[in-house]
Image (cartoon, rainbow, N blue to C red; front, side, top):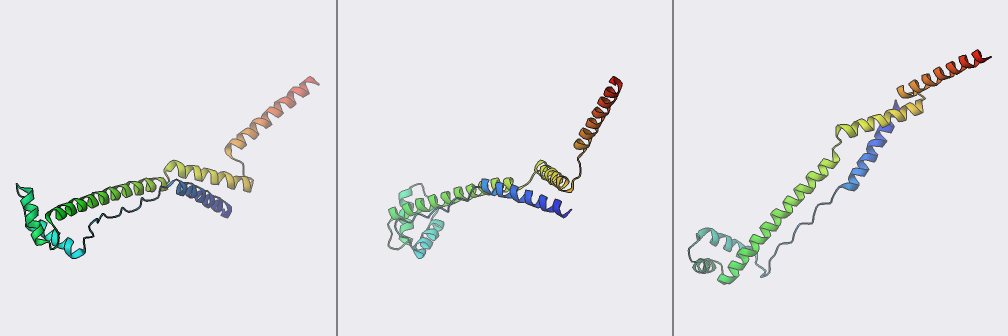
Length: 161
């Protein structure tokens, strides 16, 4: 019985190793764009200004109002930073979605379905039976058929004598 358990454990380990080899690694986290070296204080000022100034029909005027609340940055620099942050957020969301997909695919590989479990159980049972010298049902049937054939041949040979 210990041998059967050890065989089953070894088979599970082999399956696990094969699965680990198929798993994909997670993609690297994307780096954030920060072309104009915005510091945290300036970024917070931009965020606050964006919240306080609602969208206007004239976008140029809106960015002028926003840039007044963000010291040392022009309206163009504020607008470019806004677009840069938006790209960063989109890249981060895409990366998270890709990580989720890879994680789900890897998890699906890790789960043993009923068929794989039955295969492992069957291989372990056969290994145990071989070591213990126990014959399977098929081997027993084959042995009976061979003995029956030998008995018939024996009767035929006796009849010929």
